[in-house]
Image 1 (spheres, one colour):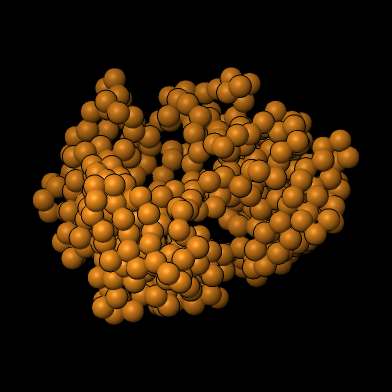
Image 2 (cartoon, helix red, strand yellow):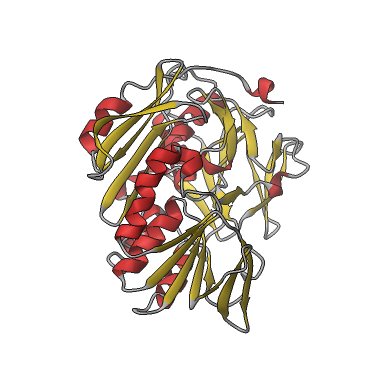
Length: 395
């Protein structure tokens, strides 16, 4: 193997490129990025960057050390096809990159809604998205956030800090209820009310209405909410359409891989947000869209690509994500299923400082903490994987 193409120019792609050099691959490494920017950190887009506290340069993920990796960057020219018969990645410009091995790390894009073409309607995935949204967050303006997940909560928090009136609309009865369960999710939802955010839950948006710009958000229960700006935070879709006809197994959930990033095609592995992969903590395949997954998992995929065994896949890290909202730190590790028993093991819900543990058949399977980072770390270390599988079992 003399040339590896890493398709994806964000955190997972950069992590894969670094892992190739760390695992002593000395051939050519070509990194393909859809955006014309070097990899940058996305979590601040909904927080400090959106608030104007940090600039574009502060988001950079590459360091001076990365200059020594000798990477061939192809930015602003996304992959359009994968021809495994000829061993080539085809770019949108028509250029081709001949490669012996391929790492698929194309990430995901924000879901949208009908009417999203109106001015003032935003999703948040890129620097340009955040800059456009920042211009609409003027003091006293009315922002409607559609979706009460972590992105929606962070945007609402930042908007309130900027003096914006915020209404949040969540289709489920409680924001984050499917992730955390009703009791713990209710404690998190309380943060919105504590900070002046009006929460409407248990109904869906049926339309975004306006002329050149959005003016109203229509709900299924007949209500109409006035809006100067709207943020749609209803999840993400994996960027896998370009793989049509490649022979790589994929669907709307992502590229199918095992726990070590192997696809069904030899010399093609996948990593990060675009993967639908087995999670040993969940006991099933799922798509993990979190920063730590994009940082850590590519090393295992690279090990698989190079045919090495230096990564211990028997004990992968537990899924982990965090969120900063209204000055509160929220942290979650593991994987919760409906029916798991939950118990507050440190602190109490009322104080907004607690740790909750989730158990399945008596075993600790997930941990959530609000404003308890040290105690969270102690409980997180007790999580252990429960299952293992291969990509063949996903088909």
